Image (cartoon, rainbow, N blue to C red):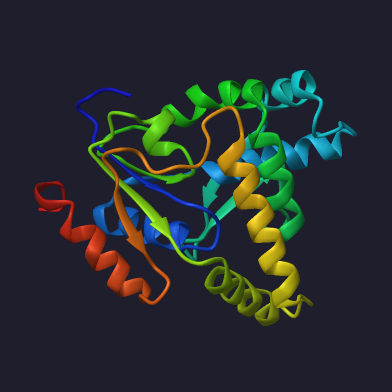
Length: 226
């Protein structure tokens, strides 16, 4: 990353709307979009497909360093993700994939292996980086930093609706438990724990619409978006 390339980071736990906000912001500005969580989900999926234990740090880090992945924009503007030439766009969005990603993300060697890969996304005219440590570790000198939050109950309700729309079974109680466990794992990991950067703008999305959150983010971007 060079100082001449603007970077906006959007961090926070799962279910706060950071992915949606980041994609909308990237489209509005015509910038690149980095979904860092997808890289960890892909690493976990690749490790499992190769028969590796998710706590085998050296082996999983080797998978991360050699990840065979492509991000392709489809005609409907959605990004299709290919792992080892297979479309895994849906596979990496499951609850299992998310929990597996949280486990491998706690491994320092894996985070180190993916660090430069994430920084390489910073290309002109700019990049919107969505993740958990974008503003603290990956892009500490980012032009603007945001940290989105929401209560576990609200986040579980959002996820519950998404799963129901896909025809998948879930219970709110189990989703809240999974979210709380994942939050604790992300906050307590040794490498790049989940926390707001000291200079991040913190936005609680619990009772705000996507449009309201996007407007608030844009209001803090000033001259960047003019």
